[in-house]
Image (cartoon, rainbow, N blue to C red):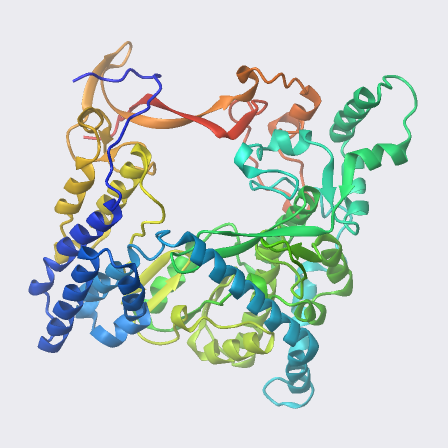
Length: 621
């Protein structure tokens, strides 16, 4: 066998069938149902299980997408609980049904149709927001004034939010602003120019009219950024030493743009997720507000919007003991209405958010739309803002129902004590939000939150095939996902995915199967997980060591590609001074890790190659 040397580029040619996703799904079903005959189900449940298995196999043999669409509603967690009951002994069958319905749920079978459905849902939620802004908010205001259960509820939530964020935004609210990782209105993500260097370097900067004064003030307070723009302007105008006309300077640096661009990203094969791509400087400022709000919420309420583990722990406890309920909202980002924010936020904060948002957007068909929501997914402060509103609602519900127990908020992943569950639902609906009944659980043995699913305290999170398998990394990822699923399921179930794993490995070329393998790790797409003994080699000063080969994506240095970018002043903006981020008054004492590697390297997201690397495994036996 010919080994690939460490450091060499890797480009394997694969021969993959067009229906590989169906082949894997069919084999996975066989592996799942192999153990169902040994489970302790009732006779009726066994008959139902066999009938479902037969229907699924018919769908797989016929590659029947419509049949899969029809059967998926029967395989949601709520329907499965109704099917198998709430007995803990049925946990295995719950998982079998759950995994069967989840594996191809997010596969892009019908990309065009799912995009159309996403746009249709987006417009429907806009009409929902318009109706709330015009009329439906009056229901909450009337209850707030007269109803015993909701008397002064708005004042209570408003005061709680004010204690968190203050009466007015601080002067340095943008001190931790940064560029986001995605595309902006003025850039094309297909070129890969979405890394920090290009977002600083590519001019002019797009910004909305109301955000322009904030952008000018923020840039003016950064000497390095002003220095880079000064050099760019002087070379552009051939004015190396003379005075600068500031009005002309800013007119060349910025381009006023009032629209965001509405598009979709994959979510499931039935419907996509709609996002708004906003002007670059708007996103930069929005992320400054986002980081400030996250710090305030954690300090005041203890909800850490940078860590999902607490939500996951409470979901586990809720499924085990039943004292906590989980809530999920349908289209939470697209139903945060202007009227809701106006009623709850301090006026100065509301005014700032209006300045930083995009007031309108352009749909994929070219039509324009004036937004009835404060922001949508794609806006930098949406996540933190909705967490602030939901947190205030949860705390209000807990206090008014005299509930005890922990709570958690992470975006629209909400966990509340059971006693406050119904009040929280009513309050959120009065604020204009829509409860996702399929993913909200206030009773029964199942809970889900932040990517963790539990049935009677047993982790039953399934795996999903979310994209077409096209290369080695994709094969490694799906293989390792199945491997990890088998490893984390309770050993008493005896689940064996050996046939599924063997099928996936069959499409990996022999030389890669024999070279790229190793123990389970966090890298799911760099080699095949295996319990085979590791390869042993000799190194100077260390003697015999164990190691694995990996397929490692390496970003190419853009300058080496001969494009001639030598804008050193813009490069300097990619790193914080002294290798550390600027200190903030609201994060005093927070340690910032030192910068690692060369932060001045210019890379493009589309310029990535796979290389063979070798890594020691000193602790693996």
